[in-house]
Length: 400
Length: 227
Ligand SMILES: Nc1ncnc2c1ncn2[C@@H]1O[C@H](COP(=O)(O)OP(=O)(O)OP(=O)(O)O)[C@@H](O)[C@H]1O
Ligand SMILES: [Mg+2]
Image 1 (tube, rainbow over the protein chains, first blue to last red):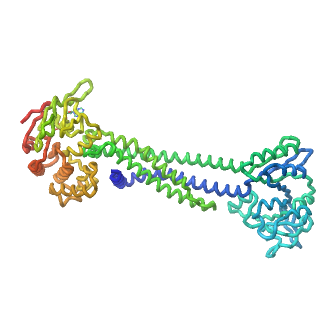
Image 2 (cartoon, each protein chain N blue to C red):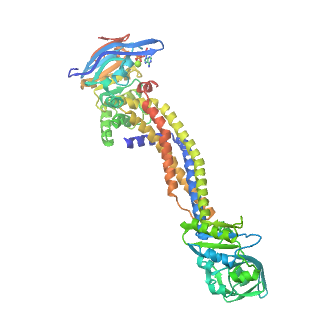
Image 3 (cartoon, protein in one colour):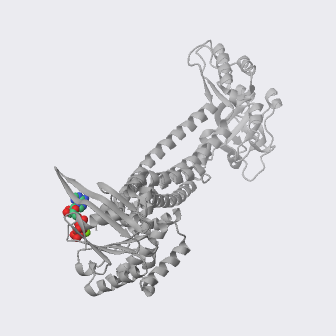
């Protein structure tokens, strides 16, 4: 009987091709919107979060603004931080920009970062060629540096920079390593890179202590804390706050801690909420599509009153009549759902391709698209089918 | 209660409609017995309640009062689902306006009752073709209703009514939409079916058509009289 119902509903859909197509269009659009929204947002989310966590998972970024009396953290304060449980290490940062000189070549306003050896252990893929800066470089304030490919191209065009020298603020540094072209370590350049914008900016990294003495700074204003176990982020953060509060005498706004994991969490929550909202809006299209199906089914029941009466006279049970009409509305909306799903995936493939992130067919999206359209068919087909099944055969036959 | 050969029994059947304040009694206590193999005509003028009676016989409508047995079953005891089964198995309807489904071919139309009886596709096709052969339409099986003459359409309808081998062939003005000649042919078919042992209940307002039956009952003002 189910086979017969499907066959009968298929015949009827084919017979009313144009009407069926227009009715299913609502479902097509609704499902297409839902599928493409989910697929696009999921692809974008996973690409952003993977970049994000590459940069910042298990990391607290401390900015010590200091107080009028104490402009930053001392070496002692850093030692205090190192004693916190669950910390793998601390990497202070000192940035300045200066001109890079080599022979007669000058590159103006190059960013110079002072880093310690911890920074390189924490970013093991950073160095493409040569070696990272080591503890010995720090302790003996060696005049060595690591440069990025952009700076290499400007200062050492067509040459191997390893072992060669350049001058920063008049001081001669030996290049010991070159940063890998593919690695990005900060969010700004990561985002720029993900948008396909190539920013050509020279950068050099020198030992932290060397940078301190070059700039005359005597306190640390910025550092990264590497956490052993990210699930214990909150504890480490609380301990860090305690140490920093002591260091700055509980003065308000003297420091801030950026927790990359909780940032990632809240970003994920936000994206999730946005997706839900968009899907909610797209569902309105589906609702309208469902109402369209209901309308068409009601028209169909009215048109086929005599047929229903005849079928009942020939022995059709109310349930069988109901099944026939329900099959028709489910058929119609699932058909629309499948087309919508196909178009939605196509659309999202195009958009995702343009965004330059990885395309992945989302099973959630397919499940939702199929489930939604089947549900719409059942929900909005139910009432018309029931109406048909309850028709009085005499009234139905008399309406000729 | 009913005798062996008696397949249809009506006792005191009343059908009334409440029209505003007034109760209109259409059937005023009808008694009727039909034996197996009978060809009976119910004759009456327009508005006398013939179709009302046919609806009750065909289990499409229920009486306001009275008892109705069909093949030994008390119809008042049946629920919707059982009534559907009885209509499918016990009754073969023939309507004045043929009531063929325009989107189905002759053979598909004839198959319809078998679908609801749960007969397999192959078996359905075989039985439908046999029945179309019986009514002389072997060469028209793939025609759609609008590709058939009125008489041919009514013969398809008769084949459809008989395909499930019902207890009663129930016809309401089967010649009403046909010209005299074609109507005569359909009546010839009815007489043949009667000769083969079919039980036929035919409703008509036309005395000449009613004469084809082996027994005539007249309905007038809601009362049934023999002869
Ligand atoms: N649903 C209804 N409500 C009220 N009155 C009805 C209803 N159905 C039938 N009637 C009345 O019952 C009477 C008999 O109707 P019926 O259709 O049985 O007549 P008929 O003998 O078949 O006439 P015809 O030869 O014209 O077909 C009519 O007066 C009609 O108005
Ligand atoms: Mg009538």
